[in-house]
Length: 215
Image (tube, rainbow, N blue to C red; front, top):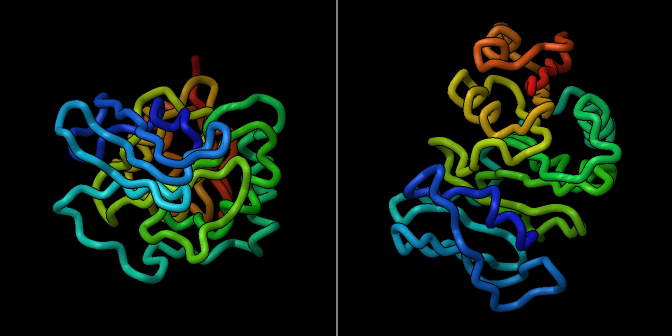
């Protein structure tokens, strides 16, 4: 996990805007291999093992052993990663890219083409073994409820299938202008939900819907 992620993640118990503090037990440069994220408000501790962050509250159900949020990619892993990288315009500028549940399968490939951006992959079950990439952080979250992210901290985001209007709104809020949101294999009505979330839709077909956040 990149140490700086403590500045973009919210406490999963308290929710935004409550930030957390990273306590490092083992690290390599600015990447934390072992330690925990602590919440000053609720005293929650969320462990980091092998670089994977487990943002699960004490009352959350244990993640399924298999990837419970797997998604049927519109094309192969590499092709999908290239598509996401292109529509999100990941070349050049640095920042954090939010990869929603269901897209953990392309996380490593996307990180390889993301340049200076940090890919933050939210998943319902940690990969075994963890995907090793110098600019990839894996965050394990519960299967329902909002993502523990702060507003205006991500440069781009990708979701898949039918994320729902609430998820689209929360991810739109997490973007900083002129950040982009892409939804792979979007359900009917995805473009309308993106507009309702305050985004400007720039492209939409059966493969991907893309919208940007105005300054």
